[in-house]
Length: 286
Image (tube, rainbow, N blue to C red; front, side, top):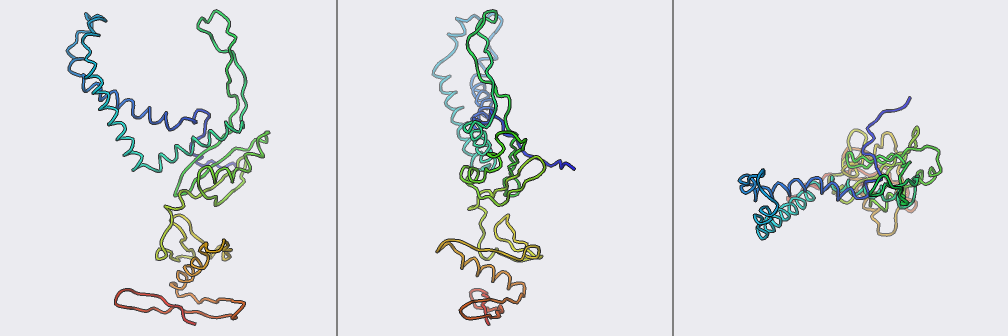
């Protein structure tokens, strides 16, 4: 049975300038409104039925018009900067959708046909032609709970191999980490961790509860369902501190820990609470 789930925003060929178009659509009415407020009195006092073009040109005060446009531009710029600061996630989504549209166009993963463009006089034939996109792959973008879901429709076409292996492009292009890739009925879904630096938590916030352990703001290790974990990384990458963090979080649940060390053999560790004047610490004892 086909699943009907919210697929997110569809990526279209016109999204290559999505940030500019969105900013223009939002700020242009504000810009015009501020300019009209500066000239509202003169506009209302003007008799538009009897005014001539010459009189209109003479009534326009160029310095005052430039000042009003400058103030309007400054307010729009300030509003854009404030919006970008407080609505960072929304702006980031626009950039992501814009990059996905450019990815498809620059790699030519679409079909197009040449159509004759109309000249200035429609009765006369024009030799000019323009490209019209007849097929653009269905790609959907959604940001939810700190995870980016990118769903790509698979149609068994000639671009199927490229669309089935977007992991490296998405990770490097969107600067996110791939957490899951799932092939479903007629589409493939890529799940990426959004803004991994902002989603980091401190060691004190790593807590085990109800059979799962919190690793990041939106990442949980459900050890009751999947008790196995592989920790790998380069020298100095933080593997030891990560393991110690897991040990401390699990021992807070009164768990019994067995450490298998090829050098020293098996050991059993318990968590001992040490209260000091400054803080409370947990110490491992065998």
